[in-house]
Image 1 (tube, rainbow, N blue to C red):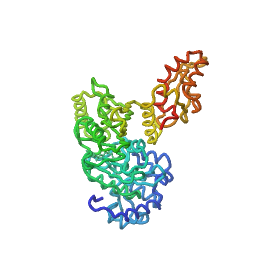
Image 2 (tube, rainbow, N blue to C red):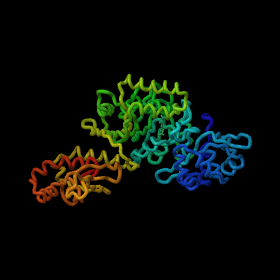
Image 3 (cartoon, rainbow, N blue to C red):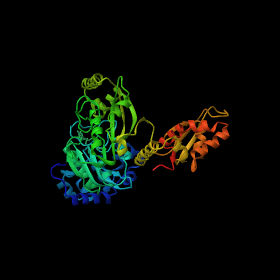
Image 4 (cartoon, rainbow, N blue to C red):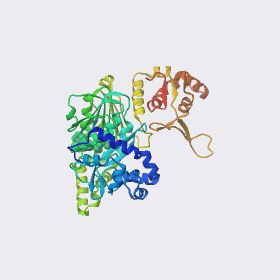
Amino acid sequence: MSTTSLPAPDRSLRLREALLAAAFTADGLLDLLGAPAYAALARSETVPALRATRGDSPLDTLVRLFLLQRPVPYASARAALPLAECIEDGWVVQEGDEVRATVDVRPYGGPEGQDWFIVSDLGCAVGGAGGIGSHEEGVVLGVGGASTTLAGITVRTPVASALDLGTGSGIQALHASQHATRVTATDLNPRALVFTRLTLALSGAAPADLREGSLFEPVDAETYDLIVSNPPFVISPGARLTYRDGGMGGDDLCRTLVQQAGDRLNDGGYAHFLANWQHVEGEEWQDRLRSWVPRGCDAWIVQREVQDITQYAELWLRDSGDHRTEPAQYAARYDAWLDEFEARKTKGVGFGWITLRKAESAAENPSIVIEEWPHPVEQPLGAAVVAHFARQDYLRTHDDAALLADSFTLAAEVMQEQVGLPGAEDPEHVVLRQNRGMRRATKVDAVGAGFAGVCDGSLPAGRILDAIAQLMNEDPVLLRDRTPQAIRLLVEEGFLEAAGQA
Ligand SMILES: C[S@@+](CC[C@H](N)C(=O)[O-])C[C@H]1O[C@@H](n2cnc3c(N)ncnc32)[C@H](O)[C@@H]1O
């Protein structure tokens, strides 16, 4: 597709109508391919899908053309598409009596069942184990695991303005277009802005304000209610691939992005980033990240995974297909990666999410929570993010006396598990487990379990503790004295909801 002459919006709409009429949607694909071939496609394996699309229906044709990127007969393409327009606009080209796609067009189901389409470069729609298959610097990738993770953790309250920094195929801008009146999407790579425009148009979403440039440069003096970025966070020895290598040393690109976001957020606004960070010898990783949080912002940082430097180098060498090059070239690249880490005294790399919330109260007394949670979570998590900050606000403004005077309710879908030897009279320990949101688990003692069990919002915490003290033959004053810390933890982690919580 030419990036200079773009299809007119009404023509994108006609193409959208044709794709929908053929059931070229997430549900339609699943029906046609069946679950195993559909899942294989997400792993970049195309053979099962090729076998499932031997028919001549418009849907078979569109899957082979845009997803599997095979030439299709001209007559089949004409039955499935407004073909003359598609050729003129550059979506496809004619080669003899066949037609082939110039871009990858992939159905993508929105959170409310919307039929969306993500447009990206050919061969780059999914990472997969085999690498993206292109070493061109300016390639624009489709949706990957990082893209959907970021979309899932983003707070989706209606806002006036949203910024998607490093928009790529436009997936984050597309999500934002559903709850932001005005969406700005930026990218260093001008080709990405073209793809974002196509993704939005083909998905039937409002157009975004598209701007070319690095980091916050294109939006210098503007502020937003929401900022999202899945940036080129890979820590690599020199920038080779714009979509993933930031081109600044180490984790400097992520640090700069986070630090500069504070001035670009409106009060009450959220910024969400995916990031990688170095684990450096002689430094706590949490201290490194704390130093990134800009003044005036609360932060919630979750480390989801840590890799040692060899795993990390191999992951990205495979991602770019370098493992399929000459052994000597592969070894030299691997070596360069380890040299870079050695020079930076880096022993590992953390992967995770960084969320900032701009708040007046944060100027004096910010809430900065930095934690490790490598376990599965329930996406989407946007509502859990809002609840996290509300709980932090509550805890900051309620001392122990206020806590004991408040009443609490056990959060929905919290279960108790007892762990111990079979046949033992008492469990070795009791665990409370959430089945929603972060799906946390926490150990509690007998008082904690008893307390959580009776929290239905009807009695103040202090009165419940007095009753527990009586039952357990404990001094109620001592129990009131030592338990607030445990209640705080249960509130902080979302097991208990306070009546006085916003
Ligand atoms: C990992 S991709 C993310 C694409 C998309 N937002 C998503 O979530 O799938 C990173 C994007 O950042 C862009 N980028 C790279 N360096 C940049 C910079 N210095 N400033 C802004 N964007 C940049 C790349 O061109 C690429 O489109």
